[in-house]
Figure 1 (cartoon, rainbow, N blue to C red):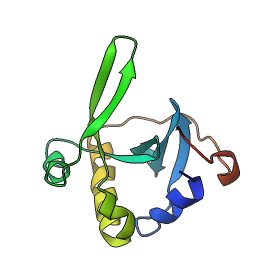
Figure 2: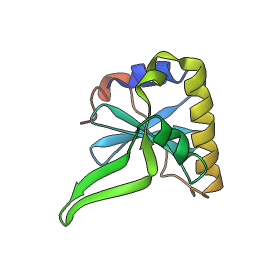
Figure 3: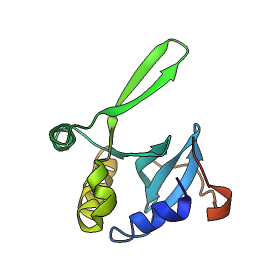
Amino acid sequence: MDAEFVRELFTQFGSVSLRRMFGGAGIYADGLMFGLITSDVIYLKADDSFIPLFEREGQTPFKYKSRDGQRTLISYWRMPERLYDDPDELAQWAHHAMAEGQDAGAGTPPPEVALAASSLRRYA
């Protein structure tokens, strides 16, 4: 997934930045991480009040492999495919995910890492 594509995807929401992490990238706005990208899939931050919306869409939480087996990170859920074609609704979901990051006291993110679109072509 191309960094410029991700920025354009979230245009209705506002300006986002991407930071490489763990073979993928974090999606940030106003210094808070509200999403992540891995294997060309976007996951949005969620809590107990937001998770039912993902479940109704048939989405699943972020899973990854560790040395001890598979782990599930229930604070990030796969973004519904239909949102890739609906920038207005995507902006609403992104605002909700951003609020989750603020409510969770996401803390101070690592120092800003400038990523040129050309240097962040693929995450997986």
